[in-house]
Image 1 (cartoon, rainbow, N blue to C red):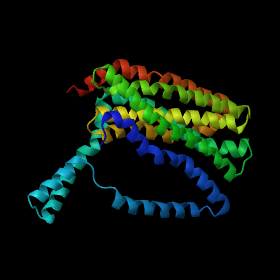
Image 2 (cartoon, rainbow, N blue to C red):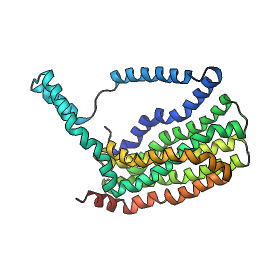
Image 3 (spheres, one colour):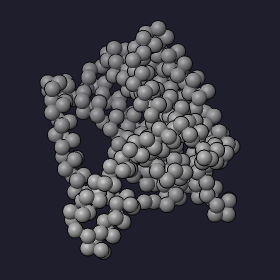
Image 4 (cartoon, rainbow, N blue to C red):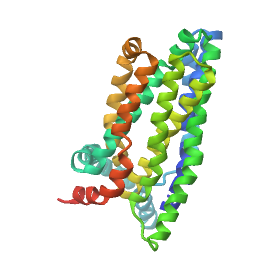
Length: 318
């Protein structure tokens, strides 16, 4: 829908509200849990989801080119509604299988996606780990009430909004500068420099968050570390998504392939989080995560910039 030079701006618009979800949800949940019965959490979520579903049915038109072309051809050739419906179901049956297999094939045969998937998985797993333990930090370590402790999630909101809004425009600026230097030639690797501040902010935030909590410093220091980590984490995700959109025709399948491992580690990491913090504390626990992030995530911009073209070319070979 958008040209590559406006990819960051479009992602900033598309991710603004979704990125706020993990921050606003716990705030509202804390207020509801403290002042209403816990069952109301599910009733309110169900009502809100129903409203969003109805609104989406009317305000989100089809924008994928193949079905639009099929519908246009049917109208121009005056094909009956029943014939068009039968064609739709035949196409659905013939395309559903390949569409389900495509993400797995991309993950197996595309080295670029394999490299990206490893970094994305570890990044997402740390984020899930932090979310699963964040409320306990404020309630047990700082003795805050559910409502007050939930306000610390504003730090996550600040980090995610900064990543989507500032990061989106920064991404477009870097892309245009590199395109102009290359005399109008473009490449997915032009997204790599944008990943540099992302992979530096994330571990920095982890160190600050962990040791501020360990030493029981002011809530400000902990929240600043949280904001830095979430900003770097979501900038990394945003830059990787732009890279996948630039390179792959089936961008949704490429994104699904890159997130397979993320969903697995996002489930596993919160399981051992309480034991890790109990044994190592918040300081060394987050330091271990930060050091591993430096090893796994920090080389990604260099790898994509130097070897990205070869990785993509190798993946296209039959």
